[in-house]
Image (cartoon, rainbow, N blue to C red; front, top):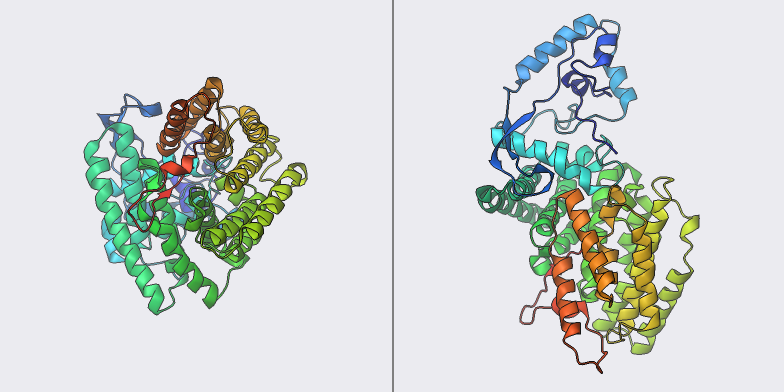
Length: 507
């Protein structure tokens, strides 16, 4: 959808929709208010090297920001002109805000910003990085509603980061890394981003230690889950590899405490949202090795039941397929650890394969009525079938008809989604799984071309999918003509000599 731009400052402060008319908001004019104007634009310094910012410069403030006292005075003036309008009624009827780069209306729990956070928020660099996170990173983390105020990354993370310093550090680190790479500012992504990231990791470690001794507050629990997700996104944007798999594993300890203390229900939608995304990332890393699976099937069932349609909008995979492949990987983990016999394992795999083949994607509920959600569901459905086939026999020749039928179904499904549509950004994993068994040059070229389109759309570059596929294709090309034993991509995700393997996050 086309980008509308931010709301005017008056509508932001009143937490209501804005029509974004220029130079003044028509809604403010119709109500006899003084429109506060629009958030400051950015001028640029430091040339960007690629993407839609190519030739642009690092954003810095082009005008003096309005300080708190000025905004308060403006609010008082507006209130005098709007004697008959109830601000409280307007806020209750709104239900959402137009931009979360500013904090939500304070509540009893969040009226006071901690002094250490307030000091950081006053820095010009912080303002720039939070604006970049809000305007350029958040929209690409969820499909269809990316630029809307209902985007949960804006709705949950930014206000929480203004209260929890570890999450603030994590967001600033990710934003500095992303902005620095876009603009070619080596200091920003190698020094600034790393410094914030290390502070976030230290804060995360401290919170996890505290959670072992006492029950964290609700905001603290959710902040831990959010920090882990932001750190993983930081890993994905830089290398696609999360060292030693510690982040998702750390989330489990907090998750268990959360479930033991109070359980999860609809009223904890923020926690459910974060847990659902982490549970899917756990599945993704287990694709490279089932022994890496951390979340239990009970937790997956809980988040699948309690999650809103944002689960599919963020992760792509339909929650029913998510539960099936989660059960598959759990059985594969048990077999790897020697807890299942081969016969028990084989039966479990064949039953799951049958479930996926018979899964009717046309009768399911999707985030919207757009027919392309059926194509996304089909791509993930056959990617999971293909993963099961490989778990049953990783040496099965890639030219096997059943393998190639799955490849064709995935590629045909993804071909129906154009590069202009946001759903394309959800398809990295299915494209990768199909690419690993693609034999013809044209299908391999198609997969790489789609990766480039996704990178251009999102301006996030995860190098792992391309690098792994190129290794697989090169190894397969080096085989003798009479040798057709499969080359598994998982061969290149195992590092001998380290006890805890790295997480390969192919999203």
